[in-house]
Amino acid sequence: MSKYLILIGLLFLFFCQAITAQEKQDSIATEKLLSSALKNVYNDPEQTRNIVLENLNAYLLSNYFISKSLNHVGIAYDVMGNNDSALIYYDSALLIAEQHGLVKMQAGIHNNIGLIYWKKGKYELAIEQYDFGLANYSKLNDTLGIANSLNNMGLIYQKMNQYNLGLKSFRQASENYQQIDNKRGLSAAYMNIGTVKDLINEFDSSFYYFKKSIDLKIEIEDKYGLGIVYSDYAKLYAKTDQCDSAIRYDKKALKLFNELNNAYHVSQVTYDLGKNWMCLNQLDSAELYLRQAEEMALQGQNNFTLKHIYYQLMQLYEIQQNWPDAFLASQQFLAYKDSLFSKDIADAVFDVQEKYETEKKNKELAEKSVLIAQQDADLARSELENNRKNFWLFALGIGIVGFVILIFLIRKQAKTRREKLIQERDLKEKEEKLRISKELHDNIGARLSHIISSLDIEMYKNNASEEIANVNAFARETIVELRETIWAVSEKAIHLSELKSRIENYIHQVANLSKCEMVYDDSSKLEVELSVLQTINVFRIVQEAINNAVKYSGSQRVNISVKDESNGVVVFNVQDFGKGFDQEMTKNLGNGIVNMRTRALEVGGNIEIKTNPDQGTFIQLFVNLE
Image 1 (tube, rainbow, N blue to C red):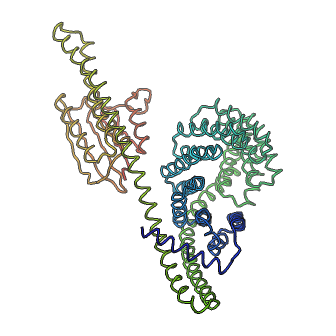
Image 2: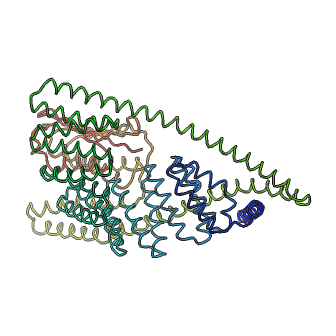
Image 3: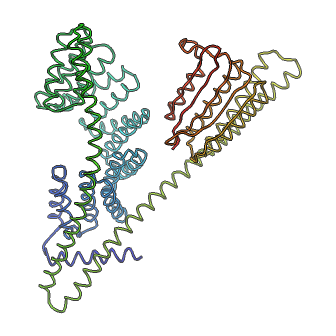
């Protein structure tokens, strides 16, 4: 209740001040002022922020303008790179929009918050915000808003390497753009689909969607966008060893970027042409384009491109056996490679200094704003009648304190709401996992148990063949793996100690069923929780390594250990002292080792295998679990 009293008091104070300072201010003038400020936000974000804050009185004509003004300040802070301040204002704007049913405003603010989380690399939170925005646009039947939200979600999924989800979002976006005949948006969606198809090596589909994007770009006369698609199309041709076609489209892109006077893209496409002429072994043409690209990159001080140019020149001169020029190009390549490393360090230092200066500037601006507000209050008091002086003093004090408290409460309430939504989502996810686990246990598990029982009876009655015995053993292994999977899936997060306990139990089972001595050592002290994917993959890798050691090595002993390394890395070791194998004969590596490496990559880990004939095998799995 106190929050609303504070809000009412604050609105009343600003309303009274607005009457004194600008009696005939109306919503049309306010809208123009906000629109004018926003148009300049990318050129001068500080000026936009100051204009909005200095004219705050004008925005208090309605809750719509309160929310919109706070959102504009958030955008200004976003452009300035001050993400935390941007989030504070976005949350404040969102709370007011939610309280007063401003659905379209909510959708736009959710998208802005999603962009902040995108920049911070918090992709799951960004997806969550775009989901909220998508829901609001759906309520309004705003097809363009729906399409833009889906397109943004697709780009984030692409960044997260979740290509199937990215394709789904891009396709849904394209369908919505088609409904409203938005050819610009549709061309972008097709280009994004083509990019993902390229990343997953579905080159025919990639060519198809890039071509559709090209046709639309030509139709709407989007020269810049067409140049980008031509360049990507050329890269796809080069990737599929069709360098003559790559050159044809690179030339089209180069023509457009020259017409647009876009020096950066001219340099990039010229470099690509040099590479593609090398692909066709046209070394003179390749050298000509690479030298042109070098000149433009030097003018633009594009060290990253220069590094690649000199690397290509080094290879070109090596093919020509022009060793002096090859050596010079190699030295230039190394110089720019080192300069990029130094530049990264300098940029990091500059970033810290810039953030410090920004914070200092914000503090000075806040102090200046308070001083201006006090001066304005003094001027207003001097113009009022004596019987209103005490009211203005009291109202000013209440307003300042109330505004601080209001911002705090708004932020707190928004945080509570986000946490509640996350908890509700987690609860639904857990319930679904329990349902799936129960279904696996009651249905597939019961059927496997019936198969095993039937095979046991058959073996007992008829002294069954070795094939039936093998099927029986395979079914038993399968039901054990099913139970392990049910255990992992039924939990949202699994503690590392639980995983190690499962590994130890499995070691005891293997020891009881084999003649091999199993030695287990756990020195890991790390206290972390693992996701379902991490748990299943780590357990399966260790399980496969132990099985291989017991079945194929001929070793009398297998050592298994779990150890900590720095920065949250845990090492799982499996070592046998058997016959080993020749790693050079990769064709002899079974699916088991290939699957182990694949599972390790899925959890961001790495597997090292040390072995030689008659020298045993040492397998190490490195996984960062923090």
